[in-house]
Amino acid sequence: MSNIFNDIPANLPEELFTLLLENKNVRIERIVSEGHAAEFDEWLDQIQNEWVIVLQGEAVIEYENTEQHTLKAGDYLSIPANTRHRVAWTSHAQQTIWLAIHWL
Image (cartoon, rainbow, N blue to C red; front, side):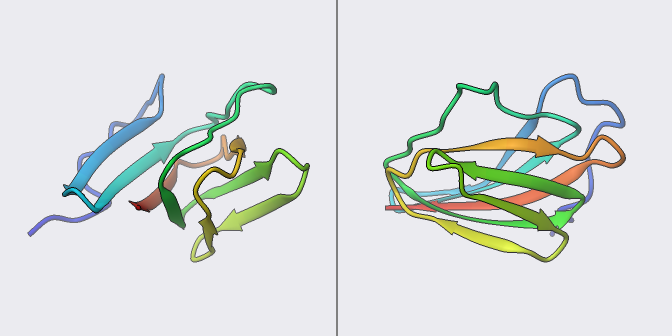
């Protein structure tokens, strides 16, 4: 047994990605952000679908069409495969802890 909030360093110079489970169909990871965000022109375009939930903290996901979603603890979002998006902002006040599920 493990706890999603354990083993997180106090300071994060880079986002922390922890693989929790992976097989040929699905990947589940914990992501910890601390004021991290993508560069203005940096977009993710994944071949997998992605579902994310913010467990702690706050973040903004932006789509290439300028649509934005502010996510707070408990908010979740489904991002279809091949949808250009980026993390535009994460809180500096506290770590943002995400759970991300990727599937084909």
